[in-house]
Length: 144
Image 1 (cartoon, rainbow, N blue to C red):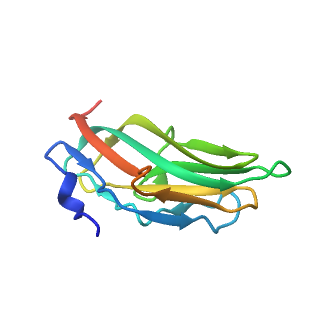
Image 2 (cartoon, rainbow, N blue to C red):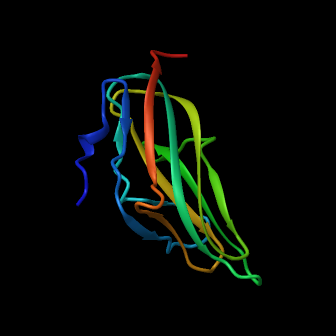
């Protein structure tokens, strides 16, 4: 059962609801994929927002070949610089990484989570009760 998207919202903050999923990264190296299982956040009013995320990734690297996962937030389909995080290595592992930054938004701007893989081994972004993947936004001020 999933929680309604409106579960974690207020007049000055937004947060994606907890959800369990496994999103295999199947694109070519460095080809961003939207993590569609994480709902988009739509900004309700303009200003500076503190945005943050955490993303749990799985990488299937080996001692012979490493596998990395790069996650990042996008605004209206474009990368938000400074939100990139990289996980992985030369062994099978699960790690959680993320970023927190300040960013100016207009009304109805949309924030989405994206990821890509670097390498040829299996990689995915996952979320369950043992480690959540989510996106949060908190209104800070009307502008810079």
